[in-house]
Length: 133
Image (tube, rainbow, N blue to C red):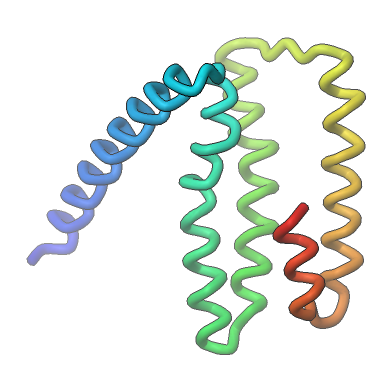
C-alpha cells in the first residue's frame, strides 16, 4: 500500500477517534457532575500522554531509556509553551490569582523533584514516587 494512503487513512482514523473520545468524555463529565474543563484537564490528558508512554516503554525495552526521557521533557516543553501560547493568541487566557498561587508552586516542585530523581538512574521506588505524584 502506498505510504501516503496509509498516512491519510491513519490521520482520518486519528481524527475520528479523537472526536469520539472527546464526545464521550463530555458525556461522562455530565453524568458524574463534573465540569467539561475537569474532563479536558484530567481524563483527556491521559490520552494525549499515551504516545509518550509508548515511546518510553519501547525505548526502555530496547535499552534506550534516554529516548523516553527526552521525549517526555520535549513534549512537556512543547505543550506548555507552544500549545498554550497558540491558544492564547486565538483567545486570551484569563487566569485567577488563586490558581497561580496554587499551581505554580506545584509545577515547580514536581519539576524540581523530577530533576533531582533523574540525576543518575531512577530506581523503582523513585519511579513509584513520580507515578504517585
